[in-house]
Image (cartoon, rainbow, N blue to C red; front, side, top):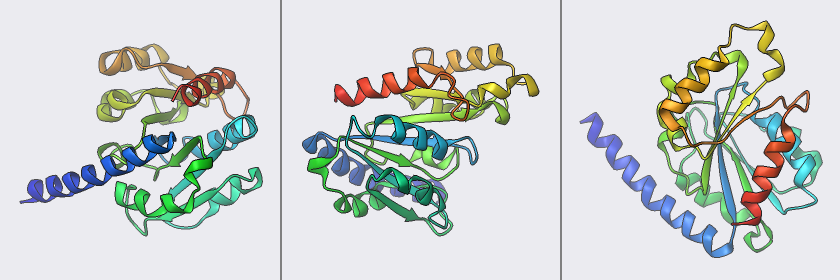
Amino acid sequence: MEIKIMKNVLDRNKNKANEVRSLLQEKNVLMVNMISSPGAGKTTLLEKTLENLKNKFRIGVIEGDIATDRDAQRLKEHGVPIVVINTEGGCHLDSHSISKVLPEFNLDNIDVIFVENVGNLVCPSHFDLGETFKLALVSITEGDDKPIKYPMLFREAKVILLNKIDLIEYTNFNKAGFRVDLNNVNGKVPLFEISCTKNIGMDQWYNWISNEISSK
């Protein structure tokens, strides 16, 4: 019975996701579903990305969180449209919640929407939001076993960012092992080693996402 219920939920979510995707394609808007564990650096990545790209592209942000608008407040200074979705205990966003907030944006004047999903590597991976693609963000401080423990996210992600690379000498993170596991799950996905706070490798990310937005 539990499997049947989840299947029905996912089916309904998929139908709405297809509606969202069709609308975004019609409006020529790229939507990036950002997925990571809590504290991996999604909001900091967004801060740096907005700072670098806001004068080049028209950007919107959907902030998903269980409670508060603190992440959105951190981004407010960049002057881009931001909508907050509080899940009130829910462990992920879904396509229905995205569909409800899209009218808050003038999609005719948006190039890309970044969705900061709820901090979680499991549930957000299973729910299609109607996004153009998923971005997986992991950090050195989480350990090197994430690709093999959470294969669905890494299999479906179009790009992977390994954050906090400046801290690797203070951890037992096995970068070679991480790459082997990632290659076994998804050997073609681009991987960028970055540090948002130290500005390491960020130009690679800016160039990659700029190309994706420009070629949508």
